[in-house]
Length: 106
Image (cartoon, rainbow, N blue to C red; front, side, top):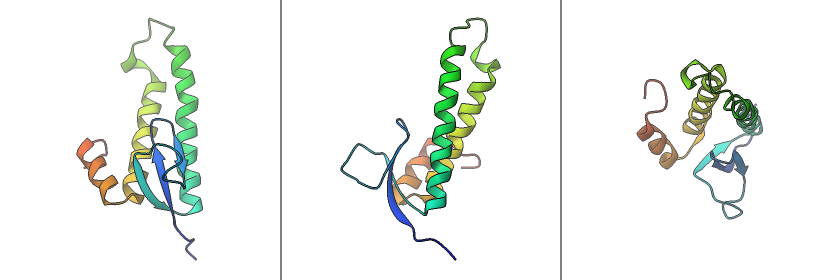
C-alpha cells in the first residue's frame, strides 16, 4: 500500500519544503510521499535545534570545532538530508549531490 508521491521543492539553506516552484527559491526537486516528507522535515528540525546549541557553544572559546559533538551531530544530519534528497530527487538533484562528494561511497 504505497502512498501517492507528490513533487516538492527543497531549499537546504533555509530548510524549506514547498509544493510550489514559484513561492520561494529552491535548490532541489524531489518526489516524496507524506511519510518521506515528514522524515525530511524532522531532519531539518533536528538541524535547526542543533544550530541553536552551536550558537551558544560558539561563545565558549575553549571548545574547538573538531571536539564538539553538536557539530558532529549537525554534519551527520546534513549528510542524512542530502542522502534523502539524492534518493528522492530528480536526475539534476542526484547529479549535483554526487558532484559534491558528501555522501558515503559516492
